Length: 376
Image 1 (cartoon, rainbow, N blue to C red):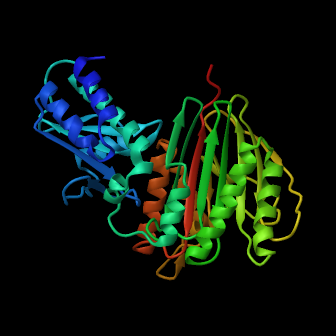
Image 2: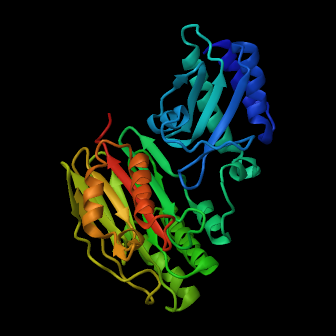
Image 3: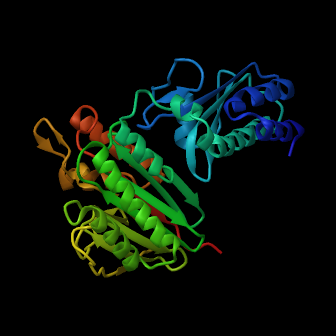
């Protein structure tokens, strides 16, 4: 590790939560002669790169900052460097530095600093609103604020899998949500197709999500996780409110997919350029009845398989009195094969926005999971 990189890491470790950018700017100026250091964060819609300081967002897809974000690689244009601010597959934005030093290795060192910045932002975000506030182009509804706080992130990458998800309408989502976790051997994914309006829908989704987490962290299998969450929702609402969910567990060595369909969103498999909907055993939504027994299903995945989970809000999106539908979805998903999961999710949401000529009215959730095979 070079001395400037080491100094930048120490400066980030010691900086107050709200002064991360200022402190590394000082280090980069001294070590690399930079005169400009900016942080662009991606907004909740994955549509705009917003500056931490200033008021000039980047929206043009061809801009070097977007090329850096999309391809997750350093870009140099007009003596300015654009570096991905990402960690563990979670893309937060782009670090802009100028002028870029010409000496060999300098760009790689600056990329290390951008990665260190991503880790520090993740570490301090629970204690400051500075970075959250700067990453929104408009105010979130209260329900949306609650929903985004529930999420584990928007993307996750490990050698054996890649995962991404997005909510729409990003600034006004109510009940749709997703959650995931992995332990290196398995990855768990739950997707919720929420019902209701406003804060009431967000509260119902929050109850179900925390009940599922509690069951998962207790070491229970999927069927028992569903049963515990079902009972939690029923105990509160006595059957008057219920929620659809799909619970999945993927064995990362064998590709064995275990799932429970509790009135769930749709599960689509992209394999060999073809899309097929997996036949799920429909069971009662969580909280509909007291003490429901849930059954698990199992499927064998092949290396390179891609799964999409989509809620009804995707299929039922309507533009000019025409429904988006299964045919358009099938056609679009087939085109996502070469894309990273976050790019695939973002592209599908973008296609839906173009179809309806604006933000979606109804909630929609899209999650994409790749199994890349066992890794020794």
